[in-house]
Structures are given as C-alpha cells and as structure tokens.
Image 1 (cartoon, rainbow, N blue to C red):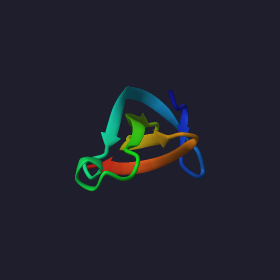
Image 2: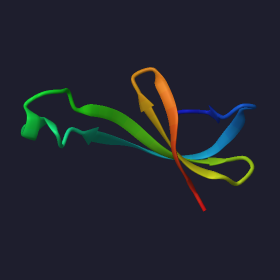
Image 3: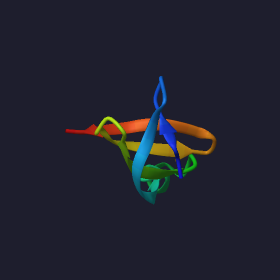
Image 4: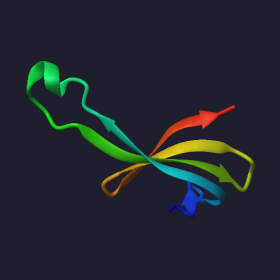
Length: 67
C-alpha cells in the first residue's frame, strides 16, 4: 500500500483498498485492444484531503479528490 502522495510528499494516514478496476468495454465490440487493469485506493492524507489514487503497473496517478 502507498505511504506518501504528492509533491512535496504528504504522509498517508488511512488507506482503503485496493480495488481492481478493469476497463475493456470496447474489446468485444472492436475485437482489438487489451483491457486496462489498475488497482485503486482511497487515501486520507495528513492535511485531511481524501483522494482516489491508482496504480497501473509501476505508475501511480490521482484519479479524483473527494470534497
């Protein structure tokens, strides 16, 4: 599970997940392509921000920020 997020890094206080997300709705229709697979986490940062982050292979990205 991730421990830090951002630049400058903020410590993650709580983690929920991972949830496996698979997106390949187009492959049956087109017969082409490889479905995208990633693990998603909801993380609470030390400043109180709540984010959805994802890991796709070795790459991490922010998928959303909760209000």
